[in-house]
Image 1 (cartoon, rainbow over the protein chains, first blue to last red):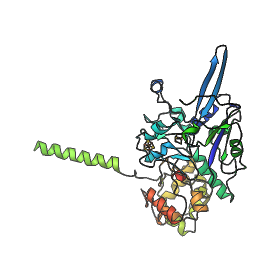
Image 2: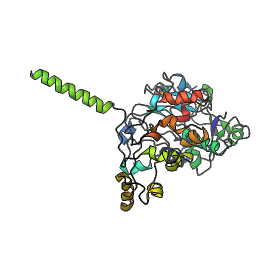
Image 3: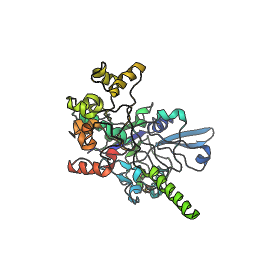
Image 4: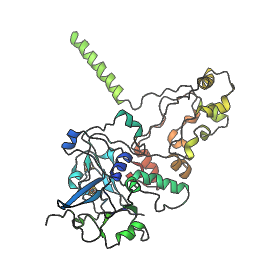
Length: 235
Length: 165
Ligand code: SF4
Ligand code: SF4
């Protein structure tokens, strides 16, 4: 059984936001108005967080693309009263919309703040309706959503492999953000296969995980040269 | 007297309105009174018209060209058969309506179930092949429990993520 993981090389990331847009298009992420955004109701499964270091004129900006960490020990699933969010046997933290009662316990429990509540029924301009991805359902008002590692792509990839009477190969299943990254900063695959790209990169000395000491065991692994001096946790 | 009348009116509105809201499916009316049985009896398989079942998630409703393959010239005197050629003359596709629908948050693939899983069409579609006129609603109204029961019986995945999207 694979254990799906993502590796993001921060030294390669240019902060171009292609992953953010790819995710929004792939997963039918609804728009919010400026007023709603001001209330903190923007939905963005993938977010590029800028970190500005130093002072003018010696300023340096770092970028951290931040999807759901697909924690191996996820705090969010433990608080869900209805099993709407849970970790499946392939390590994917699922979010089953028709089951969700919208209590938002998981939203509060996620230390990476990647769970988003649908405050409104989703709306798209008329011209965009035909662009919605039929492989992903649109979410109703009142449920929580988050990055799924594009698991709808896994559903299709598995079926294709089955039809071709073979096992799933590396590259059969890749989320939209990884596929779109023009800098080649993102990698995806099976962490339990020691020969996979992600497993090899995860062993690198440059590898670290966000808020690792919380014990969440994220399956999104970042790479950076030297000491990581991004947002520190409070001492 | 007036009160009874008012009460009756409210009752009728409530029940009628409730029915409109709660009815499970709207009635499906097909553009042509298609006779499944006659086609099956003449030796056709489901796949003769629902061609995409082996390649795609949806089995597909037949294109006009598929019908014309046999019905280019009249085989019977049925006015319903004549409609096929009328559509052809107008250069229109036949707007077949979909009978069986799953919610958008479910991924169901015919290829996966019929070809790779060897499940018969009848398991989910019942006796549609024996119908002589188009039914207005599906014989079997699939519920998630039906899916799960079958998945358990065959020992295949019951991971929510395998079907929900
Ligand atoms: S908001 Fe939904 S997924 Fe989150 S804990 Fe509540 S029911 Fe579970
Ligand atoms: S990052 Fe948050 S939403 Fe994702 S698995 Fe971890 S706790 Fe759950």
